[in-house]
Amino acid sequence: TINTNYFIQTKLSSLKPETMESVPINSHPEDHVEEEVIEIGMLPAFIMSINFIIGAGFFSMPYVFYHGGIFYGVLTLIIVTITLIITSNWTLEVCSRAQALDTVINESDIPDLTFQDVSIIGKRNETYGSMNARSKLIPIKPKYEISSQRKFEFTELMEIFFGIPGRILTASAIIIYLLVTLTAYATIFGSTWSLVMPYNNSIHALGACNLSNYDGLLPSGDCLNSYRFSIFIFACIVIPMCLMNVRTMKPFQITLSFTMQFTILAACIHCIYGLAVGNIAGNEQGPHPARFFDFDFKSFLGMVPIVVYSQVLHEGIPMIAQPASDKKSLHKLFAGALSYACTVYLTFAVLVALRFRDDITPTASLNWSQTALPGNPMIVRIVSYLIMTTPSIVVCSAYPLCAITLAANVFIAITGRDLTSDPKYKFKVKLVGATIAIIPIICAMFISNLKTLSKYAGLIAFVLIKFIPTMLQVQSRNKCRRVFGQVDQWIEESIAQSLSLREEDRAPLLDKYAKLRDVMTMTPYYSSWWSRTWVVVLVSIVSTFLFIFGVLSTFLSSPGA
Image (cartoon, rainbow, N blue to C red):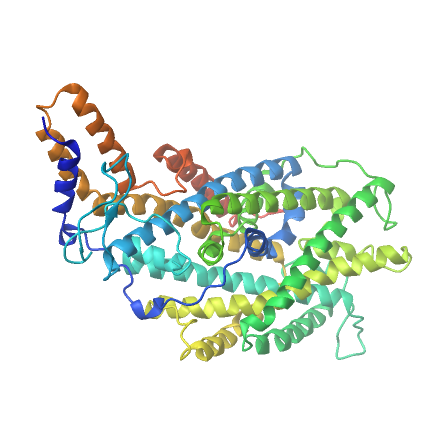
């Protein structure tokens, strides 16, 4: 008989890193100098996730729900949320695989390697002496983890697993997505304040605006001048903010975040009150579930990309995961954040759609301009103004952050480096961000329809939160199999040589082999049943069909599309 543990240990000790596949990780090591990362609890991380999700797409949801069919909107949002929970978990898996590859291949000073897993290796604490990872041995058990000292951005993950073309593709998609999102932010501010401010024709042809002016891509009549003047005011506010230190804006952002949540709650309560008493604005029909089960195919097609746009989170997962304290609960954190956002969206969209019905506007907050009119109770008017103006203030805070992110991705696409953390380039990145931030403002001068912007942003969001995570999940598993799978051939040789063993002696060896192969290849902590190939195929099929629906909506027009 032979010692089964001896076979495993002998074969693994002969494994050389030069036999491994070359992996393009840390191609710019100067970009990844370890910085002091302030650990945050799971509750702050959850709040950060919610802030990342709830954005401009939120305000188009009631309009597309009402015109596409409220019931079918609810069903679509639930399906999209489930698929995004799965792809967010894949993003965590990919980050942990990238960390494993980075640790094994790029670390030049790994201490003595000690194998402590009794069920896999056998004898506890058996040490092979001082072995340098580059010249003698790779660690037997890759560290499938998300480190607090290392963050893999979306663009870097694509470069690791798909090379430079993957990085350029991802950075370009993010750039286009952010340009459309910034334009949407500008339109929210411009349309809101053109309705709130008491413009009149005697002041440089700035006309008073009402909801009927916003039926098309641009306001009609003299309201257009008022809208563009409001956009100019927005530019005067946000462009200088792009040059500010991001950290100085954090308290303001946290305050606005809670204010926004309170505003959403107030809007939902106001809708419930309006449905209960019926005619709060004096110009609406009695409360009843109009169009709840109605279905309009063209409007439904336009709904799909907006629903996807409203749930964008994945690009921010590495940023939130790095400082989070409980790394093993990250999959629960992001699943909870997406589920919470889905619940908020459903509640808000359904209530607003049923409350305003045929009077509903593409930008949901503008619906309250009807209840802010004189003649309504003072408390109703105050709440209406709060609901109308809060989103326009929140976008003032979000705009500079998105502009800086946009500039960072421009540099990543061109140079392959993230220069935001380099003191030598920080101000240059801000300056470029402030300059680029002018482009969406100019675009907003020629389009005010948030629904249209959200639809096109949603098509790009398909790439970022559905197709890219799926591609990374498949490619990262294959890459880790090729890199760490070299261990398989050594253990297979051991098993071949153990054929002379008695059956009762071979069984434990086969069991050890199966466990070791699992650890070595593709099973990070976050892996579960939805990491399996059939789930990847199913999510890909669903995403493709939804994407086709979204593309078709760009060629078909309807009142709600």
